[in-house]
Image 1 (cartoon, rainbow, N blue to C red):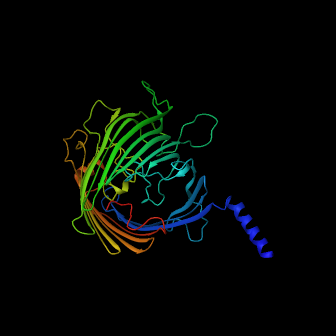
Image 2: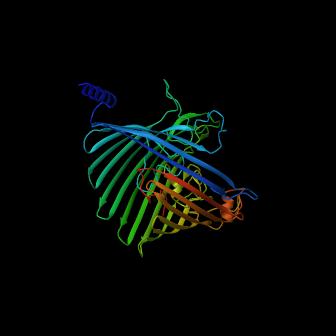
Image 3: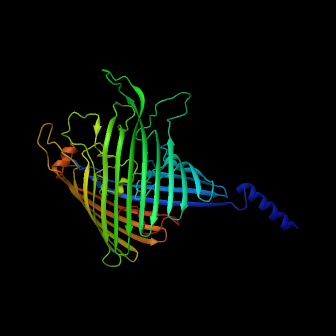
Length: 447
C-alpha cells in the first residue's frame, strides 16, 4: 500500500513537471575547440608581420521539451579564447550567451510554426547559413512557417523584425552589421536524383539617410530594402553529380554602418556557379567548378548611386572561395567581385577523409592601377587547401587543415598595406564532439 502511494506521488510530480505523461524531455551538448596559426589569414600579411596563434572553444548545452502540440528548444553556449580571462579572475566578458530559444507549434501534421531565436540554413548555405565554422555560429530572432506538402515538396516562409530596445516611439535600429527586418520564402522539390530549390529574400537594413539636395548631413531615419532571388539545382548519381545555382540581387543597399550618414545605392548584381563531380573509384571524388560573383568596376563613372557588387548576406561564406577567408567573410563586399575557378579532390578511406582544394581567383571586373592608372591584371592569386578528418569515435572528429595563399600585385592594390611577397598561410587543429547529432563525415566544408 505504501509502495503504491509513493508511485502515485512520483507520477503526479512527473505530470506536474512535464505537463503530460506523453511529453518528452531530451538534453543535448557539444564541444568544439580549434588551435590556429594565422599568417596572412583574411588578407595578405604585412611586411615583417609575425603569425598569430591562439586556441578558441565553444561549449554548447541545451534541452528540448516535446509534447503533442508544441516543442520548446533552448540552448546556451560559452565561447571563448583560451586565456582571455585570468585563471583566478571573475568572468565579466559576457562569454556565455543564448544560442537558441524558441517554440515550435504543431498546427497540423503538415504545418508547423517556429518562433524565437533559431539557426536558419538552406541548401549549401550560400545565402542563409548557420555559420557553424565560427564558434558563436549565426542565429536569428524570427518566425519560420514550415509546410511539408509531401515527402518531396517543402515550403518555408520566414520573417524577422528587430529593434535595439523597447521604445514608446519609432526609433532607429542601431545594431551594426545586422538587418532591421527581413522576409523570405524557400521552396524545395525532390525529383528522383534531382534536388531543386527556390529562394527569395527581402532584406531591410537601417541607415541614416542624407536628404536629397542637402548640403549638410542632416540625418533622417530610413530602411534600405534589397531583394535576392535565386534557383539551385543538384543532381546526384552513383558516378556523377552536378550542381548549378544562380542568384540575382536588386533594390537598395547600404553599408551596415548605422551611425554613418549615407545614401542608398541601387543594386544590379548576380552570383552564378556550376560544378561537376566524378567518382572514378570508390571513395574518390573529383570536382571541377567555377563561381562568379559580380562586382563594380573601378572605372565606372556617373553612377555613384549604383552598385554591381553581389553580397552573399547571411551565408556560411567560409565554405566558399577558399578556407583562408579572403573573400566575403567580413571583407570584399562592395568591391570588384570575384571569379573563382576551383578543383576539389577528396578521398575517403576507413576512418579518414583526405581533401585537396585548389582555387584560382580573378576579379569579375576592372581594377585601376592607382587613381588614374591603366587597368591591372584580373588575377588576384591562388590558394591551396589541405584537409584531413579522422573519425575518432561516434560523435567525435579530429580535423586538421593547412592552407596557403599566393597573392598578386592586383590584390595588393585592393588591400593597401599588405604584401603579396610575404608567405600567407594558415594551419589549424580542431576537435569536434557532437554526440548523436551530426554524423561523420558531415563537416560543413566543401570537400
